[in-house]
Image 1: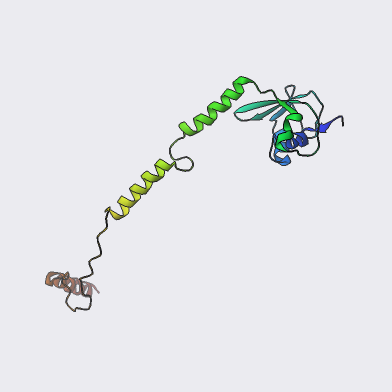
Image 2 (image 1 turned 30 degrees about the vertical axis):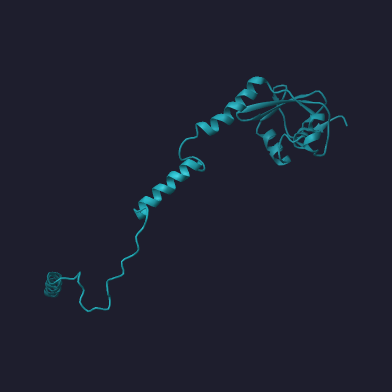
Length: 168
């Protein structure tokens, strides 16, 4: 084997999860050899240095051997050498740390602490009591007299009915 398609090699060495993703990365210009962007069908040889940009980091790999089929993760070091610069690796580490520390509130899933605060807020807002008391069911709806409806209410209702009848 003298040459292998770059998208196939990137997939086979597990740089990308699927060959489609590897092909798309090549088409978007995220894969370069010697500073030149390459098409997915570009052939690679042993000794080539491939740069793969996965924002925010640019990984660099040296081709040790060629292969067509995907291999297990333990066998990948036989086919590529990771020559990514130290500053890129530090950048990756900083991004991982920063993602947890400086996450803007309201973006993504709430943390456990935010979830507890939200639960406490909704419990107090909707119920207003930590220990809800039983419902008072002493009012008898069967009674004809309603203790909440006074004689003044009855007079106001009759006046309103009479006023509306006079308008017609």
